[in-house]
Image 1 (tube, rainbow, N blue to C red):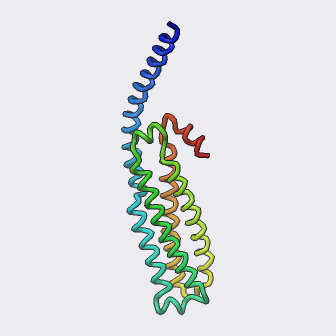
Image 2: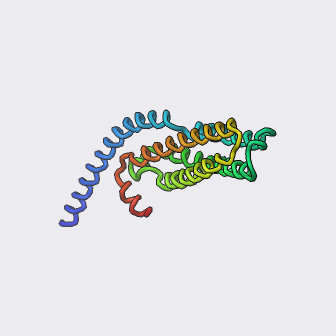
Length: 189
């Protein structure tokens, strides 16, 4: 008799929780659409890829151009080229991680939280991007030609803006409501 009462009580509690979860999921989906629309105006994976591709192309044009080599001392041109190529490869990883986060099921997000693994990958890529930006900033001093120096500085600013957009994207994804996200975070540490 006690077991039947206990099972009945558990079933009632589970039913109430499921109904509440559905109600919260519907309201979260409505909020998610609003937040998703705001996040999409901030940054999209494809847009990020296009911007980084253009930055890399500009940097390579500066160091590979006939006149560009004259305005750059020593091995600075090769270092800038290496940094640009690394950033291009990093962009591919960033795009994949962003797409995985953006395409995660709303139900999974509601129950278990955002895709913390791919958000961690994005954080790692942003740290590497920051390191590359610092290297580029340091290399600018060795460039004699003011035009090339200005062009590289402009590309650095564009990359900084992209980095900030992705950090904002990460923050908005991590702040999404979830029922058991705290539990998933606990096991991911």
